[in-house]
Image (cartoon, rainbow, N blue to C red; front, top):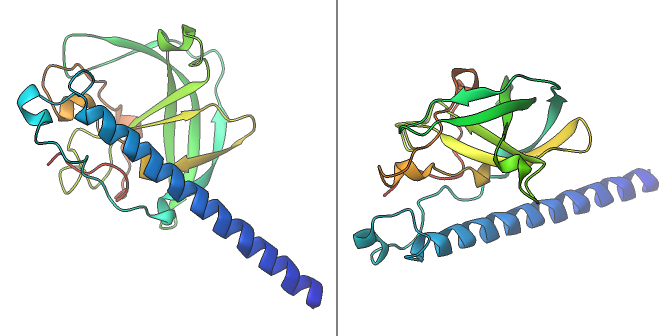
Length: 198
């Protein structure tokens, strides 16, 4: 019994430390995003809006949307062209599928690699996950949102929806943004990450 109590305490302590680290990453991610938006040289905002910028609208950190998922890698997928909000087309390759649960609902998202970006040093393993969900148009951007992560070394992957962000075209029509594919339309609400622009 004593061993079991010690084990439970250690497990709880590990989970608490992990949650603290995840929330710290959330704070860091959005601080970096806010700094980018406030910089006239980097901001996707129109020039007249940069001076009035305070922060990107977002949900408070929610541990329920930071979860472990199963990653199924897909090899030798044919390149595909994503439709965008503008005239520029972008080519991707499906790298795998992410299997997870939200409120006991089984969900799947496809993850992609940008064929141009993957040739650049430091981006070889970067995954792009564009998706829509039931909250779009009701608190979040109607065109969907994006999530980025790395190809995991195993069949398990950590997915943190607290870090999902809006495409730049949510803030300005001068950008050409990939439109999330239909297969990445989630039937649940993902009330985490970026909200609709203010």
